[in-house]
Length: 100
Image 1 (cartoon, rainbow, N blue to C red):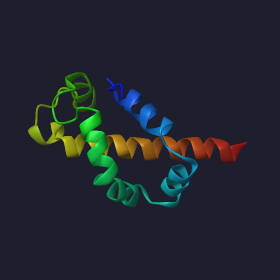
Image 2: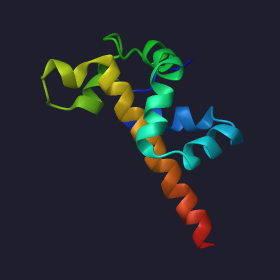
Image 3: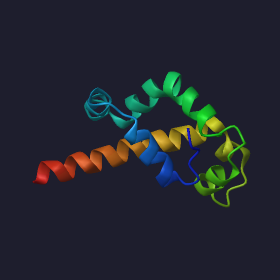
């Protein structure tokens, strides 16, 4: 799997890999519950595949920005930011679809 270099790329990769069931689950869940459910199984795979433990400096820098606080650059924190952004994007897409 190609490692994303930006938060936007990470969001796109995650959504591209989601099934219809995954999207429905996300939209039936609160943002908080979605994050909790995905943290261990999926989140672990994403942290490893995306290099969030330190090997993907470009992505980490893109998400954390100039914040040098260690907790903002921790794999768990970074994956939570991605998962929350995925939920936000799906909610936005569903809202746009509902308007049509």
